[in-house]
View (cartoon, helix red, strand yellow):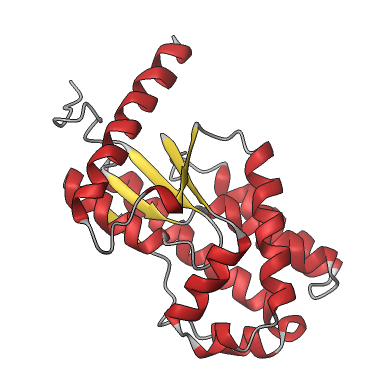
Length: 222
């Protein structure tokens, strides 16, 4: 029997937080995990050996960075599988292949051979039993101005030095991607509708929306 918490959300659920750089995925991940008593799964940024190099030279390091992220995310997928769920995941593996790797291939900063190698590895990983699809993907969305403001406030040097045109393209690609995403149910949240940083209680209406949305999508599956 699957246990449910007071919100009616299954204790073995896997919820993924998606959205462009600076939108607040980590903050949302921590807030939901704390409220639901779930584990967290974060992408490794501070220990990533390629990230600074990538921002300095996209063409030289895009393939290395994406392979690193793919390997690390697969390790996390395996960990989630072994625990049996109960996770809030910061960024999905689908964003890596559907947005970042694809963008660099189309812009010429990743070669065709490298892109085909990357996508074949991704496809092989998806077919393993260690790849649980999320029960829900929460997409955090906001205007480009809102996103740029948050990136500026965060103050990471490698992001501050990145041309604004890169963030504009990233924002558009995310919008195009989510509009065609169908690997699991998607709940959209606008970042202007809550303020978890300054008001922890604002997570409560979000949890209620998640609960109601999951109930509705389960009914549709029957």
